Length: 214
Image (cartoon, rainbow, N blue to C red):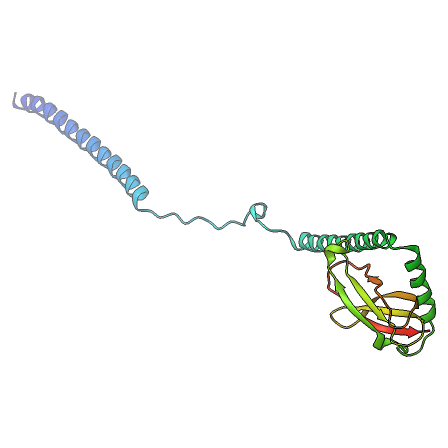
């Protein structure tokens, strides 16, 4: 009887032990899960992220590539040459129009002056009888024009041939014009115009290069 009672008492005891062990295992598993979740949250909050450097996106760059800059420079130079050529053509056309208003007699005298001075050596015998006066561009169609003042200082009638040179800032002659006056009486004066066909820029300076009385 004692052995049977002991067996009966042992079985409930084993059940309680099994239940207790099972409960401990469940509790341990739950604690492990909580620790795992807590570790994940801690990693998200405290971890730092260092991005990997990447190559720059050249498509977003401003500015032109060297080859494009070279093409742009060539285009600017070509535009400047075209503008200079157009300015020179315009100045020449205005000079022709202005000269067309001059009388045929003056035009003939200018042509004769060029022929007279073509083979002349030296500056001629009449530079002292010639001076220049500037003419406002507004009165010459925007062109560079000078009044050539010729005075017959002799006591006889004489004709004059005058060469006017236009020089740039470096002193280089860039244009030459000829004017003349026919049969000036003693003490008489003439005032023909010498008109440059060059554009207004760069500025030029006019001077009496030759003057011949004949």
